Image (cartoon, rainbow, N blue to C red):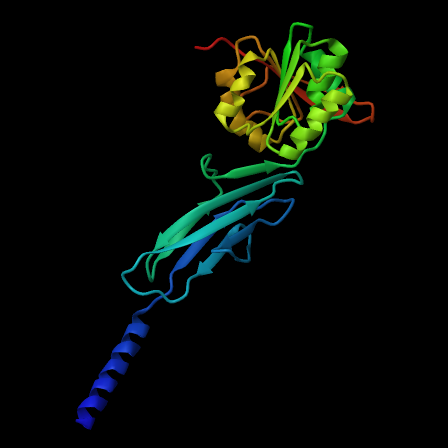
Length: 274
């Protein structure tokens, strides 16, 4: 009996050893967009993976053969000092696989873009309003309005009929509302919490006749189709510095600020819908 037990233990040990030997790692070869501003951070299941030249390689622990495993991959891309792009993906693989993952291409549904608020100088706001030929009949819209300077000044200085802004940061919404009160235009300036990439939140721009913008190229490219869809023909759109993706401006002007710097202002006139 002892010999049988020992033989059974030996067989079980050998089987366990064989199973362990059958386990294999898998590899995820990741390609990312590298920024000249800051190194792109890539994490797999929350653990940072180091690399260079736009590539990262992650080797999994030994995996059971035949089973599927999922790994969460996320890249944090900072093209400049005010834009952060989070690009999450899920990779499904099996033991022994080598999977290539391209994180250089955006996914509008999955990617998240956060832009740090940077104010436009007041004199440049005034030049933007001048280019838009703002009158007392105009409704001004500012997506991502920050402290609402682009709404307050045209309403207070030029007598624009109304200013509407949306801002994703609830703290900035309160700051903007307080500033509108301080400047005596609270009854004509409406600031709501909202996401410029959410068409429902952006629907309020439909009544605008002038849009004043200062956001990064990445967000501008994502927002442009929504603006083109919702804005009525004849609406004047003026952007400080940044473009709106494939929507080419009708013209671009360079103006000199009070600080002596030059500022590019892009102008679009919304066309009739085809």
